[in-house]
Length: 114
Image (cartoon, rainbow, N blue to C red; front, side):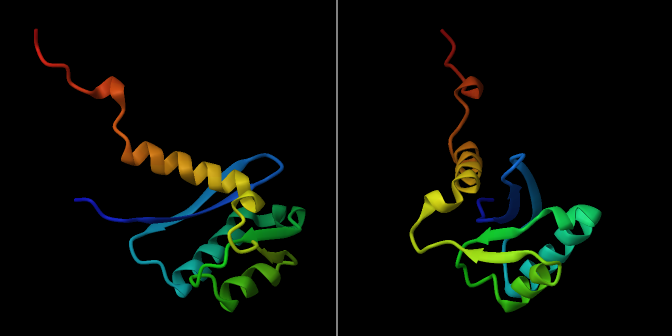
């Protein structure tokens, strides 16, 4: 039952609104590019409000992913290697989700009968 799942999410830094684009057990370049297309469609007319997309250097994000975003006039900026503060809002959001999944909630723990 335990399986590793990968979540692709984008956060708007101005509003801290998080867009969860997709979850998969096997991310690849084609899947990531399709999620970028889905984001562009979801944003619709608001696409012009965005100037840049900060992303990490994962191999899942290929030139195809970048091309989908740059065709809308959004510049892609890569995070510096080993610089979690460069994308701190997303790092914190992801960390909170991991902690919630891996740690049991003490309110739901059973207490032995007395």
